[in-house]
Every structure is written in C-alpha cells, then in structure tokens.
Amino acid sequence: MPKALLEFNLPEEQVEHDMANKAGEMYSILCAMESRFRSHVKHGSDPEWHTETIESVREFLLNEMADRGVNFN
Image (cartoon, rainbow, N blue to C red; front, top):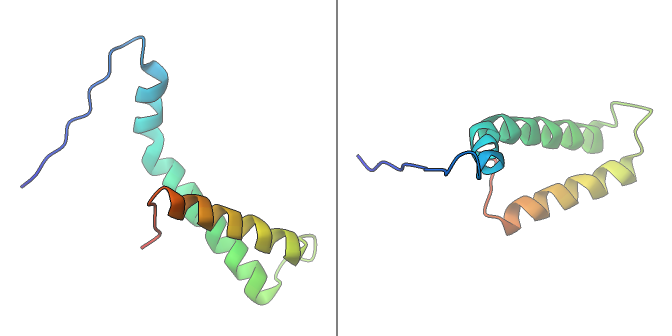
C-alpha cells in the first residue's frame, strides 16, 4: 500500500506543520459551510441571510476549491 510522509523543519516550518495537522478539520468546516449555503439557496431556510449573497459566496468557495483540486466527493 502506498504511503506518504510529510516532514517539517521545526521550528522554522511550524506554521506549515500546524496547517497540515488541521487540514482535515478545515476540510470538514468547508463541507459544512457549503452544505448550509446550498440548503439556504435551495430552501431559503434562514430569513436573515440574503440568498444572492450566499449564492455568490458559495460559488466563490466552490470555484476556489476546484482551482485547487479539492472536491467534496
């Protein structure tokens, strides 16, 4: 089975190390954001949110992720 090993020169690359360690949590947050945005656009579930704004933010999020090769599937 293929394996990958990430190495960091600490403390010089502490920020990069922390980002790599939190990547799973960040991905989970992005998934939750996209899901809530999609639900709002589809159902208009939160009257305090403006659908046009949410739709544009969701579109931006999806485009940025696609540009970086990140998918929700």
